[in-house]
Image (cartoon, rainbow, N blue to C red):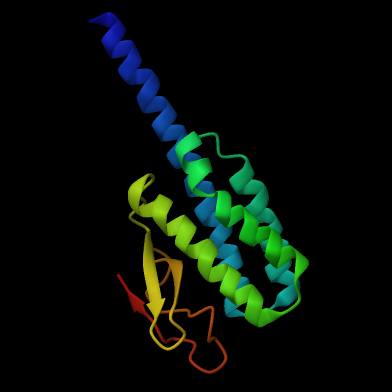
Length: 148
């Protein structure tokens, strides 16, 4: 019985560490989202690098494996100056993080958003604001989007 309790505690601590690391990832993602919302290419690249570094530090194998393609897309952002292509990559990054958020490391402060005009997804911290901040169409439709 002692071993069963000990095994449960070890597994619980590993799961908590994975969630804590992913919560840190979401906080960095928020900064990248804001850079896109502001259409600031220099900031986008800096925050994409920060997010890549943060995702590389996640020790949970399941989460790390899920984010493999996300990391590839973050690298694409670092190598491109084409804002249209970078926004496509951000959509893929957001979807990868959404899989982890919804299946492996839930966090009630973050929600999925979708812009039906751009047909793209993103994550937004609903604890900080309930105003939609569309990172894809911030100049022409800054508040277009649906939260789930």
